[in-house]
Image 1 (tube, rainbow, N blue to C red):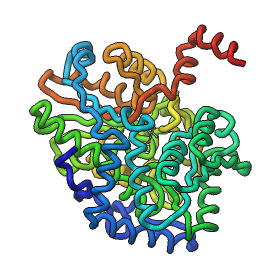
Image 2: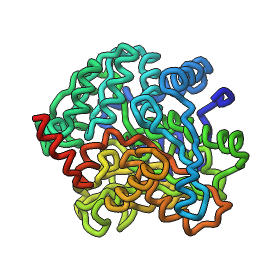
Image 3: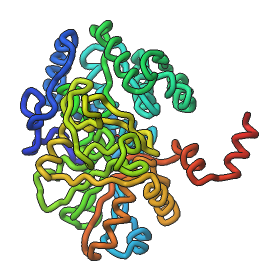
Image 4: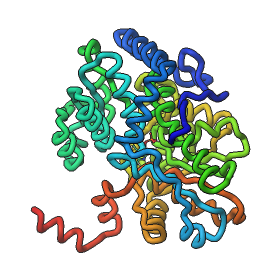
Length: 419
Ligand SMILES: *Cc1c(COP(=O)(O)O)cnc(C)c1O
């Protein structure tokens, strides 16, 4: 938006200079990567102070990505639920369909400034790989995406698009052939090629400076909300902001500009899967006996067993199906600044259907977790209250999963005719 000039804002929930969010965060990386992380930190700090960098980024946000995304008053949904007024920040209208483009563009621009020639990333479901392959094509980087063999085989549509965009998609054959093995392979590649290669991270995770940097590139979402509420609806501040939390990038992006304003209640929604009682059924890090650990370069809450072994997770939405959570969310949880709730797969499908039918908006399954929370919360509040829901992405990508969950017979016979 024309009068947003500075996305680099500070709150009292920031990290110290070494990336510690209280006792969480930090930089627990192999020694060989420390110089690369220091180089990145220096380049990022320099870019933050350079008005040209922000100008270029704003131009990309506006003219490539399609920002600002609308803040839309969901009148039908509000009426149906009969309580607080619900506004939807529609990040599904970003280029490629989700908020991921915000931090992918920021990091690609930084990689260009650093003189890097190649982007690498790991991906599970493929959405992060797709965003990385997209910016690699746009900026002319070589691009390698690592995927566990299991994911590679399940996610053919995303692999197909990554390849069309010019990326090389590498199957990782060791371990369980899933996301964490892909992370290991990406780190090994980075160590070997650190001179010309930029590791593009997909959420507010990993060693310092990634959690703060990815957050800063997502802050545009919250800053726009603040301005759109005021200018378009004459509302000074929302009463509630709700966002889904995988690693936590879309949530922190919309929360960050409101963190110091205690009157704004913030709710992060984790994936409740089939229920949060049993390990393996869900991806809720903060619901039942949250446990701190150090994994993949940072200290935070992880779903783990007694011995600190990371455990399998389940969620109907691929983007929330992850065992860790960004360290700043860990701090916000400890400080009680953000409440972390969850939505089960069943509630998510129900919320998905409500939003599609009421507003003509097909939400991503990840974002449907936030919608589910709004469906629970709005009826309990009076009509003068304002809820903003961060709709992190659009749902077209989820057609296979949703059609299966709804047991759509015509879809099944369609799939058969395609074979
Ligand atoms: C990747 C993704 C998420 C989860 O990532 P966060 O870092 O928690 O935001 C949420 N929604 C959509 C649409 C995604 O693609």
